[in-house]
Image 1 (cartoon, one colour):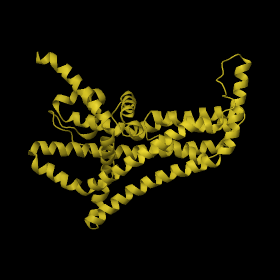
Image 2 (cartoon, rainbow, N blue to C red):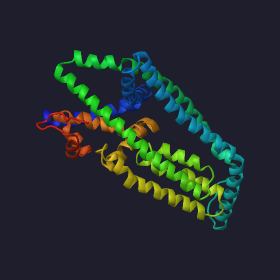
Image 3 (cartoon, helix red, strand yellow):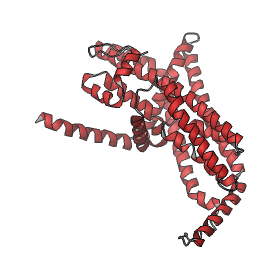
Image 4 (cartoon, helix red, strand yellow):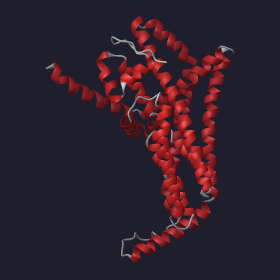
Length: 355
């Protein structure tokens, strides 16, 4: 009876966990983002604490995170401002393309929505602008909560580690700390590797766009760089903005097609040759698992969930690997044998020693 009920109970528990993640986004997502930033900032704080007082080390690590975040936000704001200066020119070009498309559709007896030919670019974008303002407001509020979690977390992470080691049973405390250490190490290595591949992709895309005469080539490089932080789907989405802009900038389809094919080839080459070389030593997840994790966490927590998809999935794999009863889950999601060989895993069900 117990054996028959176990799969049903596991399924119900899984559904309840997913529902809790979805419904608790307002609280859980800022917390997970803060933990991600703490994982990045804690080693910096430790290194600084060896040379300067603990309080100054905390301030230094916090400043590093805030400056890096400010650079990303500044790049986005600058890109939006540059695009805004081209709005009148783009509006005229958009109107001309719309009229040509409507004329061609009517000449071929295709249905055309009423007043579509007279609709301006602003009218097309006004619903998007309203949605964008709501997203901006909610994101700003969430990031304020992330900052509060980050400050408190950096202040208390050392004490929390000591409490885990002292107050839990010795073996369980060691296992919790070892698992957290493995997850932190893999997340940091993944972030470094992903930053390298994203920078390469953004630089090559910007150079290629400039070579073909596409305006705002630096912006398309920045957009590609940022979107590549979302595995699998991000590089595909990165093809769209420069291609759409090329349709507005150039007459005909030759240059936009060259932009589409060229940037698509860049993303394909980096995704299939550069990424495996740089990130292959960090990730043991199959491309199918990565794609599913991006889709799943993106559905649960939106774009931030897609960004955190790989670290969260790696955390699940590492945690499941530490226990005999859940090791089969890690085996389904990753290549344990190769991962253990790379990191010198012990035999007999012991936790592997990760570097």
